[in-house]
Image 1 (cartoon, rainbow, N blue to C red):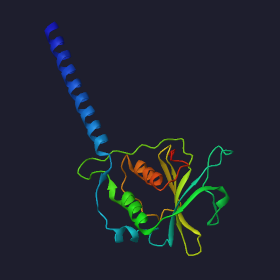
Image 2: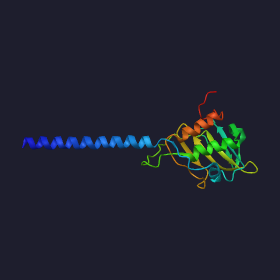
Image 3: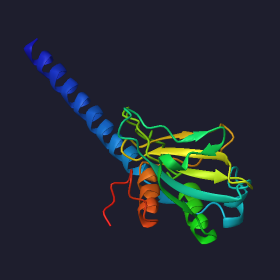
Image 4: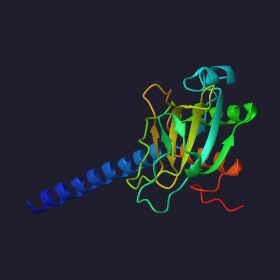
Amino acid sequence: MRTSIYICCFTSLIFITNIYGQRKHLEKTLIENSKCTELNRYSLSKRLAFYPFSVAKSIALISFDDPKMDENAIPIRDKILDMEKVKEFLILKPNEIGDLTHIIYNYGQNDKFPKYGVENYKCYNPRNAILFLGDKNEVVEYIEICFQCYGIKLSSDNIKTWPECSEKLNLIKNYFIKAKIRVGTNAKF
């Protein structure tokens, strides 16, 4: 009787250890596969055909920060950007737009592996945005970004979303830093 209890406990222990080991391996694989991979799915002309890049007359990067507010809000009202609340403003050149769209649309998770969710944090306090401007410099659409919390908000559901990966916002943040945007990126120049 005792021997069968020992055999049963030993078998259960091996079974549980095996399941736990497989789960840890699967978790590690999923996390590893959530990292950004350069997919190169879309040519420049295809990327520029995605909305809102397709309708923007110009594209700008901005930073904003109101230390008096508990939570920042993008300084746009009725499609007009309140420049008094903007800390930094940069209109992108065509080659810079190409680089930005490459990051947004050509980096994602490797399709050969199971997907792993990209973690977002709850501290959303945005300080940066990508603006899509019309003929009269009105804001047609925008992507609001919080680099500290790894969160974004799109101005509309019409914006073409992109492949997710765990480092996507870090790639976009580095793009902002390269463009000399300091506020919200914690960049030191």
